Length: 166
Image (cartoon, rainbow, N blue to C red):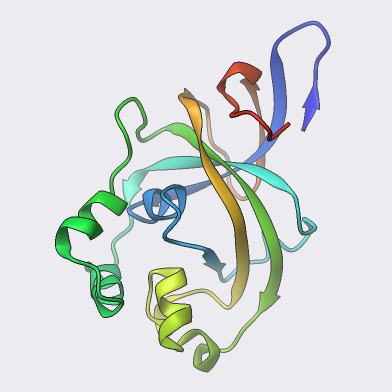
């Protein structure tokens, strides 16, 4: 993150995810993000990024619910984990996170039940590149940002960033 001395803005990297997976990540359930592309590969372990919620709902046929139920979660718990708090929604940066390692995997590795629960997807439905989510916290308030593909840069008011992240 870089700061501009003349303002309270902080320039940070961000990436977009659609619901329900964005909420699952922001709520701490989803601790592995998978993509078929290499968008996280250039960023070292410890890089902090903002999570932007896309405008769409990802069409997975509710298979994430099957994966979550396999871990013993009730439908009420699943609904809570798929929901964003009041004041947070689509088109906003909602959370800050720190990534861990990014590495390539096989469908067989991603089909391990524990991995599937951390991804919130079946192995065959998830991307080959896995990025660990080390920690995540909601912003103090949702921030409207204009997304771009992949990892993009945004300016956000530092007052939105939770303590201990900058």
